Image (cartoon, rainbow, N blue to C red; front, side):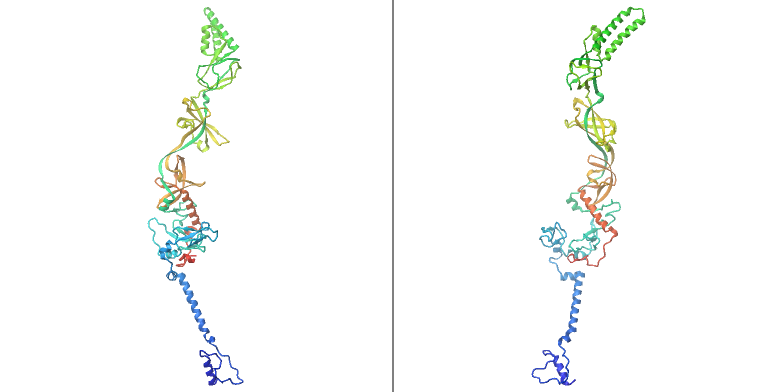
Length: 550
């Protein structure tokens, strides 16, 4: 290459000149017949340097992003939060009542349903999780619970070593040490239950109350509604033993009180008239045969007179009537029949002038000085009732009166309609306070025993078992399966599960039951202690607002 061409190339590389061009005023032209190569422009020489610059920028950007997410100090330096940690701890959050996974830092409406967002009291703001996770874990003091790991509320298989949020912005749920132990708190816990730790303050706010289990006597009272019925052994029917007619009634209406020996009615009967005559003739024969030397004749005459007298008595002729007949020697047209017992006329089948036949019911007299109460008891109650047991009675008509009686009889068969057993009680009836067909309340104590007794409200019936929550102190409650014995007067005997001196929850224990079941179910989903939290790099569960910990 000639010196002129070299000078042209050098001049082309100088800034401010166009490559391959001839300077203004130059007369120099390339020789004819020669092919000149295209001149090299400035882009041809600078392209390697631009590539190196872009690659370095990308490397620096990647390193910065990695440090932003992996190095907490660098992240806090580049992404400071207004107000510092105190402001973060007190930042307000808002959520939707219908969609709790919607959580924002500003008030407004739910983007799904349009409902007004409600404020979450004392909820940590974004950035608190990073500070908590990066700070050293404080040792729990006193009865504080130890957090083992955090669980995704929507997918329990996803866990984190520190506080975190899922892709929908929901906070991870802490899993405590007592929840991850077996079924949630010990090997002796009932299946499906976990120990509940609510704290002393929450115990007070929730109204949870405890009562001690004591050793005392308890009995099972049985209360039943019965019906007053007459004592069947004190009911007497007055019947006709001869044919005749009612001439006069001294007891003329139902319910009339009569006493033993009081005249009831006067009856005319041809048989009674003839029997009176026979008796008077037999007595006269006895008087005539007193002077007879024949012993057989005297005995026969005396026997006939005695037979006639007995016949009158068998016709219910009163003794006073027979004595009057013997004294006067005159036959009476009618015979007066007296009341056989004292009581009330509870049945009347006759009127004056009524013709009666042998065996016909005339009057019914009932002694109501003692009455029966027929009450129905259920099968489990009737099995413990014994004849002679003491019972108390009160009525709606006279609620202030208590009467003492006893079990008189237990019927041998159950009622197929009501599946109950009828039991008969016997009670005195002074002043006729208990009237037939009146309702009465009968109560008696069964199963009087001594043992560990707790309030009946401490027991939760599940259908297959009975659960009680024992207060372990410091707001911790342990569920236990118990066996119940005698119940009565708002208390229950505990055969096993609770010891004397332990405190059991008696108020709001249904809240403890639901919380215990929920914690046990969550623990079972992750296998409890057998499913440790997934290991994550340090700081991954850091900042809750940037998807850490998933």
